[in-house]
Image: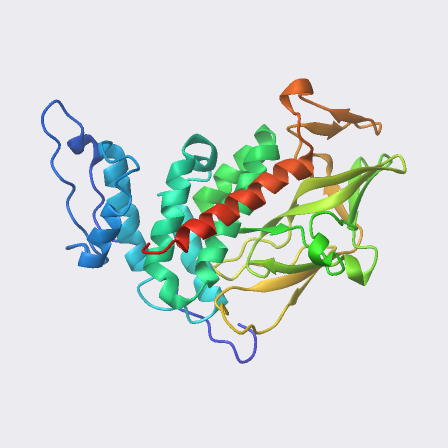
Length: 340
C-alpha cells in the first residue's frame, strides 16, 4: 500500500449454501426457495421484501427465483459493511464478478437480469453512497457491454477469462477538454503503423487525457476510445481493448502499470470516495492489431480499412457506444425510482 494507506483485508469467500435449481424444477408444485442470509441461515425481512420487489420479472421461473435469492444473499455479504477505501470496494466487486452470479454475457442473453441485479444492488447498498453502484455499472455495462457489442471472438474469450479471474475493467472515453461534448470529441489517437504491424496509441496533448475514468486506478484493462488513423486518414473514434496494468496478487490491488501508460488520481470527492477516478494518458503505447474491437471493422496488415457487416451493422461504433451509455442511465434511473 502507498504511504498513509491501509491495505484492507480481502473479503472471505462466501460460505452460504446456494439453492439447488434442479430441486425447484419438477413435475409437481414448486416449493418456495429456502431463505438465506450472509451467514447462511435466514434472509432478513428487508431482503425478503427485495425478493418480492421484482414480481413482474420471472416470477413463475423457478430458475430466476433461485438466482434472485442467491444474488440477494451474496449482496448482503458483499455490502454488509462500508468499504474502507477504493481498494476494498474494488476487491468486493472482483469477488462478485468472480462468483458469476451475474455473467457479463447476460447483458445480451438476459438483459432483464442485469437491470434487476443493478436494482437489487442499489437497494442493498445505497446507504454506503453511490460509489459501488457506479463501479458495478462501469464494469458490467460500459466495459463488458462494449466488448460484447463490438468485440470479436478473441475479445469475448478474454472477457470470459476476466470473469473467471474476477479481473476489473474501465471505460476510457471522456477527455479533459471535451466538456459537454464528451464522446463527440476524441483526440486520443490510434495510428496504424504498417512497419510494426501495430497501433500506436497516443495522447497528443494534455487536453486529450482521459479524465474522470471510474475504476481507472484498480482496473487491469480498459476499453479506450481513440481516433483511428490509417494511412494518415482519420476513420473516427474506435474502441480498443488495452492492458493498463499487470494482474495483481491481491484483489483490489492491480500490478504494475504497463509500458506507455500513465495513471493519476483525480483526488478526493464530496461523496463516493469508495470509487477510484483516474486520469489516463498514453505515450505511443504499442497495441497489437487484435486490440481493435473488430466485430464491425478491421485494419488489414498492409493498412487497409475494412468495414464489416454491411446492412447488418447500420450504426457507427460511436452510435453503438451511445447505446451502452443510455443503458447505464436507464439502470441508474431504475435504481433511483421512488419506493425502490
